[in-house]
Image (cartoon, rainbow, N blue to C red; front, side, top):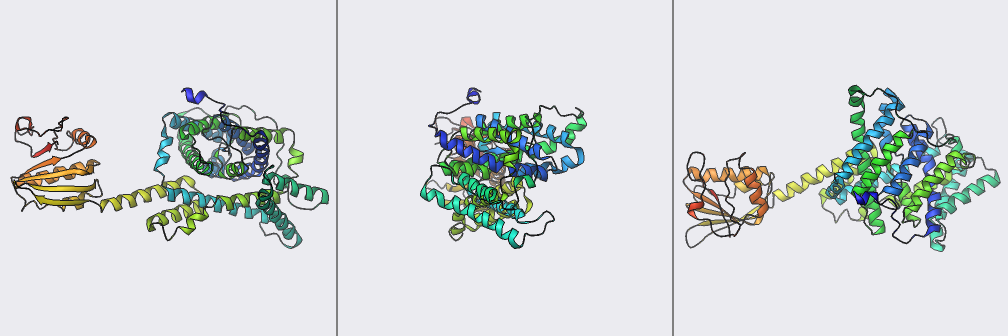
Length: 526
């Protein structure tokens, strides 16, 4: 518990200028994103902006990854859109609070370590899919209100400003890194549009961001079992999607910065942020990979940048809405396109011929699910399942048995490879029960008994030898294998005698079956 109370961890050296300027840039980029995601969920713009402020502030202070940015996200918006439509915003607030509680529980139960089970091809596919989504979402800015594409001078002006923004972001770091290139690009385009009086779309054309401090609000809905039945499925999905996206973003930032974040602490922070978001009229959210990469690419590495971004966003809402609403959307569109280009793992394309075909399949499939279904949790889950099945299939084929008969006429089967549900069939085919001598040794020095299917396979092979009057001895079982076999003693007819000194088991230690007969399944410990 003590580590979660260490709220302000500024142990690393902080470049205050970089952190503050980067935070200002991120705050500007948060505005259109929060508004857009609120619209996706069918909620008011302020609901998204309040969520961005609360999520960003709380996770910046409590989170396990300094420099990472959280806010209202499309992944959460897609989940709650039907809930908002069918039941209203009060149910959304309650769902977000419950999702936060589930994330808190996941953090305190240390479930963040489950992210170790996500293979690298899945992360590649997730990142590439997210980059494509970010890029495609910017194409809407090239359309008019009626959905038709911009044309003529309007298109040329907007496209020119977007390209100028991208050029500054790409070129300025090659000359100087004193000021974040993305902030310079936004200010430059803003100055050109403002002083030349150019007619182009601005943030104010999307929606007004004027408001006050997020109001504290306990959801007004019946506190009943029926309500819980409605909101719990949504809350569970929001919690899962939020944790997956946040912890994957944490891993990506870890790779870029060559440091290590704390997944369980981030889960606790996400949970606390969602609870407060629901209580302060926000739609909830999670980590934002786009804004996080903007922050990291600007050189921010501490918590201060996220805190500044959140406080500046609140200042925009309360005091600076008229000015911020004049920021050209072309500048923010160019910024997000550069984020998409920087997010995409271009190196993954060059490794297609070097990677196993199964890894390429997983990466491509996760990318497609992310792009076309916009369901990040489902994409990661599908990728992990397929990768696990491929791994199981590959390992199932690796079971081997080296055979020889010693001077005493005992036949030895030296097993290589894991014995688990996928390899039990091949394992059973290795034995010649009818033609084997009366004594058989199965040596597991280079193998492991992994699961219940493996135990059942061992039980069946001993039964086959017993039926023809032959004895089987198991040799070199590891401690964990012995423990697994003993735990299954009441479920499957298996008897294992553990000899902690690794001496030969003598006759007087043999165990009897319930029928009083000697069980042929016994351990030779060496």
